[in-house]
Picture (cartoon, rainbow, N blue to C red):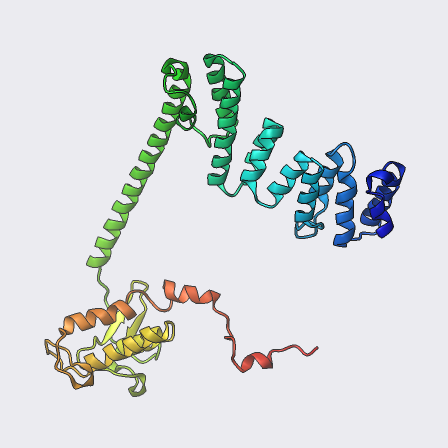
Length: 367
């Protein structure tokens, strides 16, 4: 390797450089060497050639399986700057995500190269717009410095807008022109821009109409649900304990009686004792909601039937109305069916065995 490095010295270039490149290319392409030192040497050797096309080609293809460069990008950038390889510098700056610097340098080299750089941040439209604005300013200023007529500069600017894929509008480049420019020169571009805005307005109006129709349908559905009713046979079994609704929940199920509703029925025709429903939901929610459900159940179970205020926790004077406490409980346990609602659907992403459980060890595969 040290001997090959000497081939990059000015006094040793020529046939020595060609043979060194031949060996490096063999090691990279035939032997599959991915050592960064060898690839840095390749950058150094390619940058010593008169034409930087091969250097740019190498920088584009010398990538690992995950797209990471096999060479040191900072080393390559420093070397390219020292040897005035400006197009290679643009390539490296762009690969490093420094698009604004790459565009500024590309504008000093070639406007078409700057346009290519402006298109590279595909997943960042605001950045692309900023880069295209920089290119637009350069194009307009270059026309002014070149002595082009105002009409020619405007035609050039309008043609440039078509290359931006809709990122820039006529109003974006107007500030780059003098205040006294005749508006007549922009008539066609302004009309096209207004037509585009009209199309966007029509599209938004259609979306608003569609959203309004959907809202009306949902409003009617909600009104229908509020007025709907269900006939429940007292001998129907509870979905959880399988006991008939008339017999109530098992004694071990939890708080029951008092001001608690005897059972709940859902639109899917599932029925639960209120105590069984609370237990079912408690298994699906977090600790804080589970504790809150338990507290509300105990308060309502301790409140005599017909009372207007619910018993308070910790023996404090009752302050909350039964209706309010019952509504809080129903918001937690009766908002949707625990067997087919969204709360149980979200559990599909939950692992069957949680981290830290001892059962995980029993499923381990012996090495």
